[in-house]
Image 1: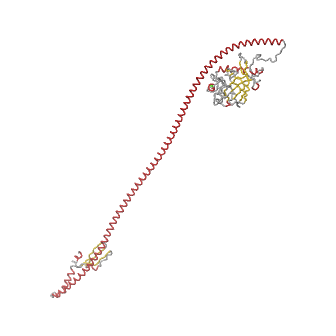
Image 2: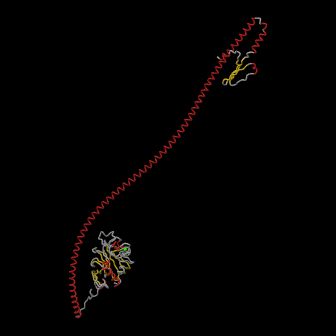
Image 3: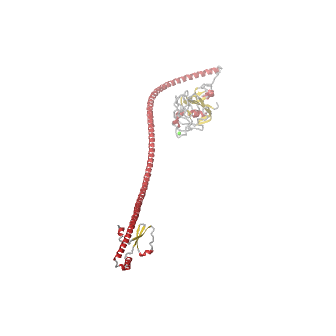
Length: 500
Ligand SMILES: [Ca+2]
């Protein structure tokens, strides 16, 4: 419609349409007016006709050239008609041309519109893409953050899991230890109950043993009272016998007198006695004297020891190695208690026909004031084996010297080493501690002996009967024959002059 309105200016003329390559308008048309329109990439140039001057002048000129014809009305009319026709024709051309132009513009506009729409779509798409990209980047950022958070959470979870595992492990270990300890406690409980059971059993046994011992004690007490009675009886009988003995002695003296008178009578009448040796001729100092006096049977003899007015009964062994042995100690059945004091050991105790100790004072006098003596010790164990120890030289000191022991020249079968102390040892009893021990050997090992500290022998220890002789430290001991805790069956200590 705008274009159609433009036809009001019939003189308007579109000279050129250029797209992308605007062409220069020729200079020769300076007399014409140009109008340019820029639309997008295309430029439209319109040539507009001159309106006033020329048109009017030509009109005026035409009027002037045809001044002669002004008076001729027909010519003027034809001319106008022709002009009109020409104009109509031009107008038709214009109109066609304008239609074309319009079509062309419409065509162009269509493509431009499409272009514009496409551009708009592209812009929109670009915007959308941008938005999408930014959204994507934001999403990526968020995703990254989420991933970071997830990683952290995973790390923490794994750390917690590890800690949980460690805790479980330590818990397991603790449980194991607890189980072990419980087991040990259970074991200890078992042991405890066992021990308690044993203790109870032992207590019961002890009670039984105590009861038995009480019974035995009562029995022994009654036995002792019986024996005391018997002893008193025996003492009375002994007094009687002594009285009888004195009567007998009187009779003996009378007989002696008779014998003497008979001997005198015989000597006067020339009778010679074949065996003049008699026990009463010369008192025996020891068994060697008796043997040499012709008494060659083992038994109890009376000897007269130097400086001791009282005669002493001893057992003489006339069998071993030529006889003549004076027995100073003998044990054989445990009938005699050897747990005696100093005085008893000094003067001797027991019976020469059975178990006895001759007495330290007698041993001292015999071995130091008469002759040089050797010592022989005969031992028998519970298996029936016999052995001996012999010393070439033997004597003991005085009571002031605690009857100190002196020995030399050991030999024999009862051990290669001497079980008696060779370097000298004092005599000890339960009431006289002269040993070399901080303890009291005589109390510990019983009896009286030449203990050292406390030494390898004690023939005056406790007598243990068969079956009980093992593991006894206070028994009758001769270490180098049967060991330190074997109690022997029988012992004999005897002396004989060295020059016998
Ligand atoms: Ca001591």
